[in-house]
Length: 209
Image (cartoon, rainbow, N blue to C red; front, side, top):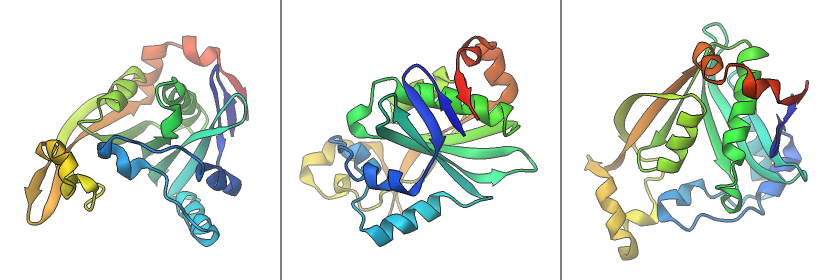
């Protein structure tokens, strides 16, 4: 799969993409430290790539800018081929955030996901404090379906022990030794996506299958 828009190209992930991700920038906001791409040796990169690309349960895709630089990736996991649904996750190079790459990549992918893979729905979740991501997903046609307390993804984050970050601790709930955050669950459907964009966006996409 390969699709190109005005700012980015999305395609199937290949192993060498993981090596390029090692050179990404870093988040400086402690709330997003856990999104920094880990520094991995060659064996760990091999394992990471295999974990992100399991034929039936998980597939991953690379986001490039139009110069061919890897600026992000996204995955669909917990794929239910019979029910035609899955869960979406996306990560961008912190140095390339707020460039419109994420929004366009998601729109390009959703058109492929619904039209070519013939899927019917897709869900995702994001921390409630991640307002930038929520607005991006809303723009792409997702709707909020619920909010729920769940274990924060990084239980050992500096937020919880570094005195410099005590102001962030109020965003979390502590229960039975676990740190919980409020997550927003969102959903998009094939019908909702094409009603929102009415073919205007997708007809302008240059697609190479």
